[in-house]
Image (cartoon, rainbow, N blue to C red; front, side):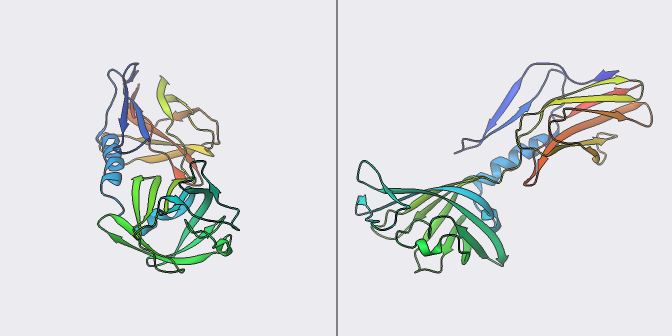
Length: 271
């Protein structure tokens, strides 16, 4: 039996301008594959290049909104969804915003409290409306159905964006965090063998996965094949390979929002 694994180095790649961390556990004698590094660099590049498609806004977001005019809190009397900050400098609100693509650069939005960053437009709450987005130098520029404010939407991380009004003397801004997330990456994938039977085990790091997907390839450059999809909270799988030789494995956690990045990659030799 030969398994490339062990204990040791925990590498954290932290994205620029992000609070998100991508963990991979690389072990002495372990495998750091090109595809794992490509996944990390793709995540980094996803932030640095800004928005490449308005579809990146599709999903459900929890948004903290801020509104002021002339350096003082906006008078939102009659709109109970807003609260004046104790400093008196701005008003605040938290609401949920969902975006669905309906056609080219046109999106249907549903908001829980009212038109984003706007006071007195509670009539938009829970009533889907359409808006158009275009991309300018990595920013999304938003054109809503009410008025024509110039809004720049910048990507902070793949799962967070900042919305800022560019109108003069207008302090409207909003920071939104995605809530429809794929689960966390399973860690610590390891294996044991008995003849042609290979037992896999890993650590479940999520509380919201619906299952795990186990993938194998039969050579370093071969294609990955999904062997099985387990139920949630399962942390082991027994594989039976056709002949003695080297096999590569990765595990993914999954839910209705998608799959995580793959676990650490391991090489197992069955005899």
